[in-house]
Length: 239
Ligand SMILES: [Zn+2]
Picture: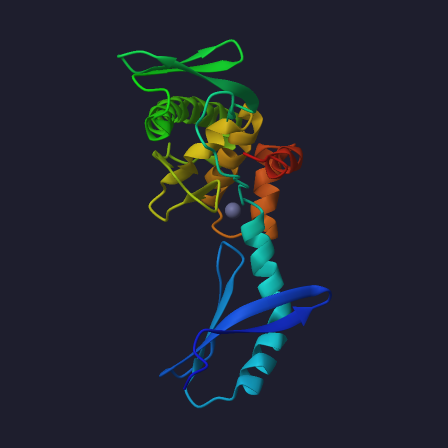
C-alpha cells in the first residue's frame, strides 16, 4: 500500500477540508481533528480511498464544528526576533525592546519600554530567555490575583480554589484537568486583564460543567455576564 499519508479533500459548503489518510490494521475508521486545524484519518486496511472519502464527507459538518471549537482559543503568533526596537506585549499594551549592555542581566518595564540588560546586545537567545523568565514570573503573580477576583465574583460556583499551572501552550489559552487544576497559557499575560479573567472564569466553570453544553454557557453567563465581549477581544488579539 503506497497511499499512506496521502492528502485527500472533502468540502462542507465553501470550506475545504484536506485530510491525510493512513491505512492501518484496525477495525474502524477514525477521524481526528487537531488543534492546528489539521485532520487525519486512519482507515482499516483494505478499504478503497473512494469509500473512505465518502465516509469522511458524511462527517464534514462534525469536522467543521470541531475545528471551530479549537479556533476559539487559538492564539495567533507571528515570530519574534528579540532585537532592539521590536514591540512585545504585556497586559494588552505594546512595549518596545531597549537593549542595554550590562554585566548583570535584568528586565524592567520603564514607560513604554522593556529595558533588557545583558552582556551582549546581539545575543537574541539570551534576550528571549530573560523575557521568558520575566513573563513567567509576572504571569504567575497576575493569574493568581485574577483567580482571586474571579472566585470572589463567582462565589455561587462553590468550587475549591484550583491550582493554576502556567505553561507554554501553542494552541490554546487555557484548559483544565479532571483533577481540578487550571492550565493557563503563559502568553495570556500579554492580553488585557479582562481577557485573562474571561479565560480563568471559563475554566472555573469547566470545573463544574466539563463540556460546552447550553448548561455550561448558562453558568458562564451567570458568573460573567459580559463574557462574549471579552472573548471577542481575546480572539482579535494578535500576539
Ligand atoms: Zn472550554
